[in-house]
Length: 211
Image (cartoon, rainbow, N blue to C red; front, side, top):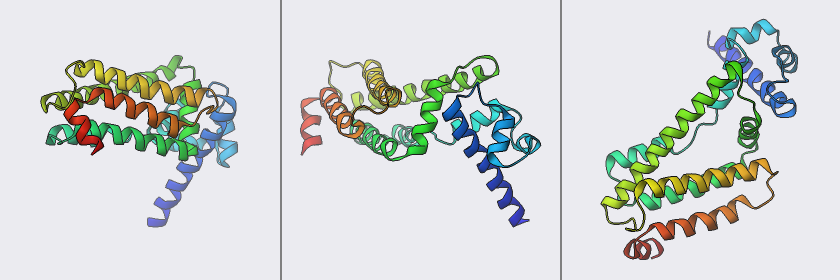
């Protein structure tokens, strides 16, 4: 039984890997389940054993690269992290490093940016919107915590700071992915993030962060 479960897991993963390759090469709309089955070396019926349709397969691929910071930020807010701005800054910097070094994650994100979310695929866009809303809410909560601790500059409202950070990070990543990585994501991204967070901090918080 243990071997059967292992085989099933390997087959499911091989189908997802095949879908990823074809989605990246041909686009989601122009890739059929028959093509994915052939690429994976399985029957179309085998795909239906694991995934109800192409949308479910796409969602599984989408969910295989979750955002790293949701749980960490949520826990930090609940527990009252002593330095939420530094936490956010470090998570963003670590995420740049991860994306720049993880080619599979890069491919999947690029597939997502190229996909036409029409018909049943609109469900995927709804899922992404829900994730973005959760992420924005966590950022706002973290900046509110920083404000309560006297670490966020009075010139920044927590919600404005959260949106600015979100737009900078996501816009930078989207440009890097969309235009064939035409700049150094880690070096340029780290400089932008550090400068932005220096603007977020009060003078006292800035001195503590650079000490």
